[in-house]
Length: 311
Image (tube, rainbow, N blue to C red):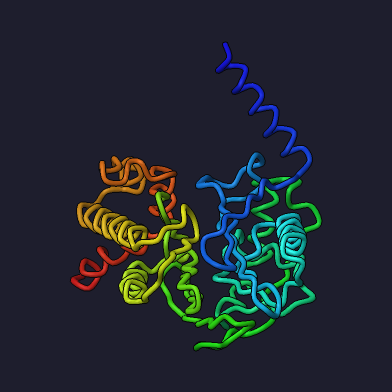
């Protein structure tokens, strides 16, 4: 009975929180001057308001640097209010890791400060941002109220720059999207990988090139980081999430290629059982279905080429 009462209270708390459109931000200090707002390893929903991303910030002597701004104007505004109240400092710049909606649709709250991203990310945000925003309105409803597209405003330069006592290196990769920014704080050893790395959550693939992604992960393993902040999932002090993401992508690519070679249709591939190694990854089955939709048509087309050439 006590257990049921506890569940009822929890459900009531979540309902009230959602009704008030307050994100349950709890800053986790992962290194000196460095905090993460850890999102849920879930799909977008009206219950979580799109808080499924790891947003982070670094407190420097000059002000605060934000990494990713979340999925809505509300997210960005509440994120910024929390940061400035906690630190007593102003946000001086923002880095956007890539153009997926949960990472940059909170930019509206930071439009008075420089928002940095790689050139291809800026272009992709401009081209696809309105579509993403419309989809988000459908998925999370009023959490998105008054959210408008604000693409990144500044081109992030590759290399190391010292800001307020922190040596920050901007790195450019590909694989999860056409343009994936990684930020390495050499001063604290924290690596912000963006969605190149998922931890205990199945990777998303709407813009993926798995071969390039694998190459990027191999390069990330060579960086001497002390703390790894993945795009989704728990922060760690070891490379295990990188290895996990690599293994999942190998399985996904192999599964899709073998299915295409066998002539299976998309529905059959979507029903592929998840192997034991990945069965505990959040959203494994649903992300497999989405990955089939994203990636399988091109693999089927590759299988048809030899037949067409022989005609």
